[in-house]
Length: 434
Image (tube, rainbow, N blue to C red):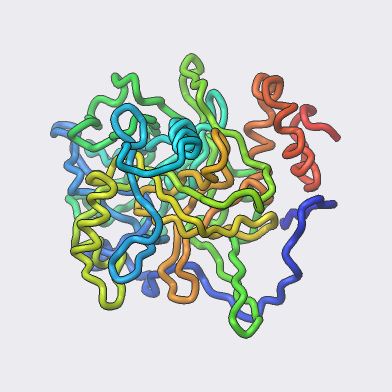
C-alpha cells in the first residue's frame, strides 16, 4: 500500500518519470557467505563473537555485514566534512572549532543517541551485534530495522517477539554452521565511550546501570501497510530520472521500548518540522564499530588513494572507533515526500540507526540515518526523513499514542501532527485531531 498525503502545505518535487531502476546493493554476488564474502560484509553494525565461559570478545573480532554500506566521503585520501568524538563528559573537545551555539546544540542533542547491543544465542555460545539508536520519548528508541533484524544468509524466521531468529551464521569467527542462533537480548547505552573490553564488559551488561534493556514494539503492521521498498530518485545530467531501491530491509525503521517501565530517560529528541531553507549545516551521530585495516581497505577503496593513510586518519578522528562520533557536512537533501533523503556526512559501519540533524537546532532530528551505497552512480548516504510516510506512520502509532507524551508536547508538535493527518493512515487512537 502506498500512502500519499491528501493535502499538502509543503512544496513537493515535480512529478518524476522513472526511466531506469537499480538496486542499492553494492555486492553484485549474493552467493552463500563464504570466507571471502565475509571480508566484504557491509551492514552498519558489527558482530562480536564470544563464549559464555570466556572473557568478552575482543573488538578485533568485529564482523561487518554485507547488505548496505557507509560512506566516508574523501578526496585524495582526505576526509570531506568533519569527524570527531565527544570526551568523557559528553563535551566536544576545545580543539574542534565550532560556533558556541552550534557546539551547545550538538552536545545536548547527542546525549539522546546511544549504542545498541544485540545479543544472539546459539547453544552455549553468545554473539553480539552493535549499531546505533536514539531516544524519542521517555521510554522509546528509534533505530534502523537492520540493526535488530538482520539476515546473513537468507535463512531466517520471525519469532513471536517480532525479532528475527537466525538459523545459520557463517563468519570469520568460530561460529559453526550447525548451530541455531536466535535473538536473545537488546540493550542501549548512552555513554560516550563504549569500547569493548576497555569500557564495556559484554558478560555483565545486566549489572551495568548505564545499559537499558529494550524490546521491540513490533513491526508486522508496518510491513502490511508499506509493501514497497524504500526508493531514492536521482536526476541524471540528461534530465532523466533513475530509481534506486533500498534492499537491506524493505522498511528499514524500528521502534523499541525500555523493557523495565521503571527506567525512563528525561533526555530525548523531537522531530524537526522546520523550513529546510533555514538549515545550512547537517550532522550525523552514531557509534562506529571497530574495523581492521584489511576490511577498511575493501570497504572504502578508491582510485589513487593511500588507504592506510585514510584509515589512520579516520582512526584518529574517531579516537579508535567505538565512541560516540559526530560527522558534519554542509551537503544534504532532506525530502518532504515519499523518497529517501540523502546526505554527505562521512559515516562508518556501526552508525546506522543514528540521527541526521541540523546544527542550528537542539534536541531535534531531521531523520534516521540508515546507511549508504558504494554505487558509482549515487555514492551517497541515505536517511528516512521525519516527513517520509513510513516514519510518520510509526511515529503516530508508537509515540503520539502515548498520552503522557502528548500532554507534554501536543502544542509544540501540532504543526507536525497536522502534517501527519494529511496521510490517510488508519487511526489507532483518539489522541490525534481529526
